Image (cartoon, rainbow, N blue to C red):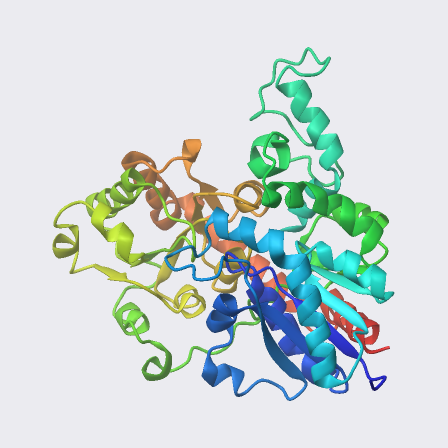
Length: 465
């Protein structure tokens, strides 16, 4: 085999997690043209992120491979994003990906020189150690969440104390217990953490992986790359994380562009007519509702959103899953047709950058936060899982560019109030101003003199030498 550089790339193929790593590879490929990138992924995920037209246009040094997903032979039926599928994938992944690595090496006649993976793919650390090559791990969620994973043992002790399992006499419950003992997390609470991180009774493979990742990365990863900008992350948090890892790089948010790209013409990208519809609305008047590719509010919450939009006569664009349509109030579509639009999919980045968009009702996904900031749009956040709760806290209390759903559950009255505050109140004007100021800071951070550009160059050198 030849001695050229050969980077094996392994995403975590569930919940939209793979997109950031894809974008990183597509940025690295032209910057390191002599490096071969072998992208190993399950077929279902590959079909979503690399449809045939895109796959045909990939850089010549990027090759996509399909790996067995762990499902039983002959399995049929929906299991996309289900816990069962994740469990089966994790059980089979180490063996399946070892075989895929061998096949990729044979295909390109190059030994693997580096692993570039999602940070959740912790079995890659063992593979890299055995092959004596670097392991570069991409952390996709918020940096606050990475700190929580690193301090898992401290958090477990706090949780035991607050739930009565320790020696503490503190009467604070789990929801109120602060994470102030962890550098940079003074505004966070135990209730902001993913439940799998603090529930050590959950012995599923996915929960064990989440609890273990913060222990594996410091000792095993050659470098941890964060999907974030240093300029908008608290200095104590970054300083502490740098002390925990061999190398910490921040290459910017990989899902969005600062400054935003020009809006494309409706005819080429507006298959559901969203941008054309927005063109006819007043500036900053429209509520855009979308909860991502996986999350979905409860039936009562879907109904409550619809009732609040109707009672306030708020113009809205709602990207809603087909199965959720059944939970809308009867006749709502007809009664709101003059000022509302329901679509199965929307070009989200373009919608949020449209002048008519006034508020984003969201699950608080990390990439969604940045997409909203690109457009200078404040948010109403209904967290579901993973880093959503921490993101909601950042949106409301750190950045001051939105509000969380009160009590964690969407109600008609709560949504009416949130829409009034953000769309029509003085507080909403201040949120919009702060979102615009944050956008300008991020435009500067993403520029040629920002930390992201410098750290990206370090990453290119790391995988190339």
